[in-house]
Image (cartoon, rainbow, N blue to C red):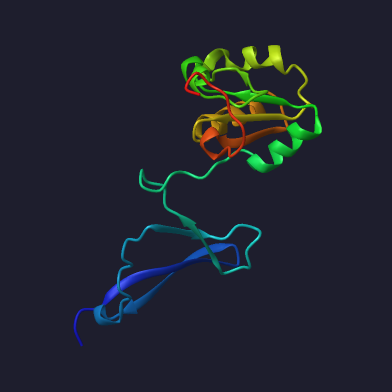
Length: 176
């Protein structure tokens, strides 16, 4: 019959005493080892039915950028806000040289760098934490970070518009 391999199956509490159960399996009966994959499985939390697993994607790679974490707003919606005269702070978090070359009319430059003073500088132009604040940069990464920083500072209506590269409307700059 071959060698018998003891495997611990479960730990059960019986009448207040712990009992360790062993099951004897033939090596040929053992389940194959799972192959590594790009998906990590973990038991489902309280939202999943008992006995099911939730699948989480692996960490993003350079070829697959990380998704935005802050609340998003589409450039089309921001354009509607601008056209309607809605009161909101429209913040460009890029560097001054980027702003000089290419900017969206009505946006205020508050560079995210240096990050340790970003919140203080932003409070000067948007002191009301209950006001809508729309942030953008070139591609959306810096503005995503800035929106999350504002959330940490108590701003609950901070939105990441993404990047100026997604803005299909009028722009200004030294390159015009």
